[in-house]
Image 1 (cartoon, rainbow, N blue to C red):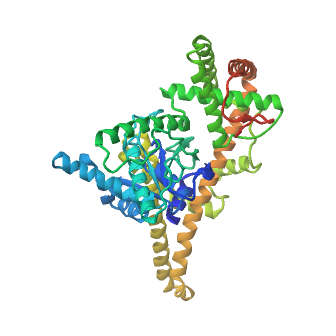
Image 2 (image 1 turned 90 degrees about the horizontal axis):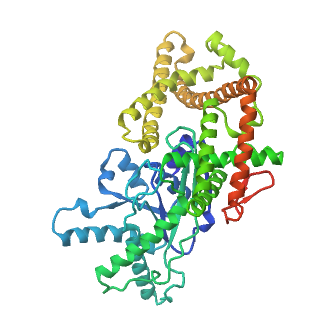
Length: 494
């Protein structure tokens, strides 16, 4: 688990977590989430609830070198899907039942199983059709939990709330395949299962009745996940929702005279939910007004993208960060690192080839965008430690060779190699930090130049942003939207 958390911290710049208070401590249940980012999705969930989450995975994955070892270390339960079993219908059903029972027993005993009911990871901006596996697992866990209560003599009334719960999980990424990006894990309140579905199936219940109820519960899970995910039909609409969110926030902040800084991931999620909820509520009742606003947002978005600036930068240029950075940039170009700290040089020399190798492997192996982050974490966890170890060994061998000339070095090859390996890792971290700071500085310089050269265009876009803000607020003034607007213009939880 410590290794998993280390890998998550290394890959993401920041992981925000909301709603841990919604996880009950007196029972188990299901965590259901959509699946946009391969193995990163379960890793994020598992890292937040150590010791309480068990995963089910296709048994073939546990045979994959390294990946299978990691999955077994995390207590993954192998799932033998009916589709993977040859034989008659009875054999397939029995394999399916065995798979469910392995996880259901752990849920009945107080653990949580994290499931992705879509069945596959994908790059779409909306949910795929949900399978009934989560609902069937839920009911099987209820049966086992009730059986345990009966053995203890503590059977409770149906619907008393002591059975397993189903908790929707929102997984949000600002750039899901990018190294050092941000992520948000949101644990929403448990689904309120309708009374007619809130039952523990009888042991002699027919398969037809059982599966019919499972399909109805799956529809309830689908609705809950849509509220957690805020799906859109296309990536263009998804992008427009985000542009609407950012322009409205920037105008609110400007009018408030505040400087709250960049929105955290949880605020981004709330802001998107407000825009998405308003769009969903108005697209049928006032379709003409909604489409007119989206048309203006499209034009505004195209103009902003052409300028390469963000909504909040219409009101002022970003800071340059450290005042020494512009000087360091010039020194870097002119003197080719001669004035830079040796640790930074070591970081680039050692880690850049490893980074380029990782990128090449990922590009070759990734079938879709959703595979890139998982491959980067797995391959990086192998390539970089090997690189640092090789550097340490080479330094140790070099010290041994020099020991014949300089006697004082004869007793320190191991220590020298260890220090070299550690400095290689630390140097890589320093190089990443420096690269980010220099990137921010260069961007700030470019935005400042754009604001000076394109002053009239900047002023025009500020006017467009203000009008769009007023249109959006006017259309949504009577709607019950998620979150509340703080005095400084941010959106916060209600």
